[in-house]
Image 1 (tube, rainbow, N blue to C red):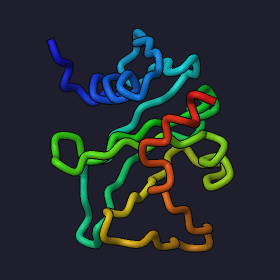
Image 2: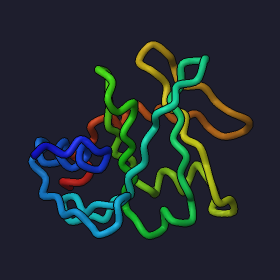
Image 3: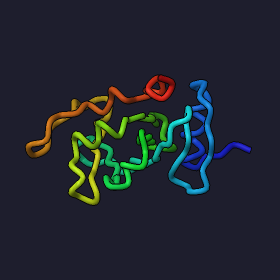
Image 4: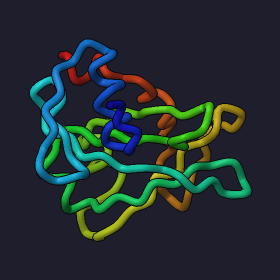
Length: 132
């Protein structure tokens, strides 16, 4: 049977990329290519053309990668494989929650406040980072 849950979709994509996947007992984490990964979903699309994923930064210290499933169930569903070291540089660990705004393919990444711009699109299907 085909698992259409977000975690199942991520696991299937990782297997398609040739990586071994171990499902963990908790629903929002996987071991992919031997690395512990957290999984987040970016479902809501704002009026300005960005998908939003809410993550909890302190929990990211337990994982080496965050895998974000963007727009599950839509034809243009994408998966981002982001090293948590990038998240820790971008978001200091002094906050509990952070939001990642992922532009649609038509939009260019923008900056918010004094934080540097990060083009999250460079992490689309970046499974090679887990295979390294």
